[in-house]
Length: 168
Image (cartoon, one colour):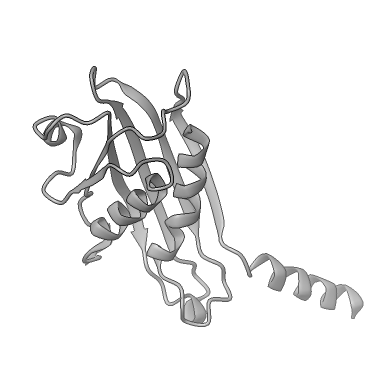
């Protein structure tokens, strides 16, 4: 009986926190410079199956902006651009940031036991050469004990803050 109780308690504890992963595709040779200007693209809204998650692109751009706000006062979010080719046609910036939603899954976790999931690719480009400075894929899944309050956008801020902090 103690074994069953211990396993149950362990499963509750492990289901009480969101889990995040970071898969770096390219790592910068040096740290980014604080105070430089940044422009952030607004990714296309996320989809899962036939479900299109309205405003998920805007929420992702906003979370990316908040992560960069700790390091620059000159941040612009382009609502009309979702890729680097479009951003190149904007005014000159020091860093160009392109977040891309690879996976966005909003589940009724409290009923189904299936966690919310996100997967976001973030690429940062040099403003002069447009070479990739850094690129990563951030993924997260919600805790199982959500009590109806969690959504995929709630999984954005922690991994984005951590990743952007590692670049400065």
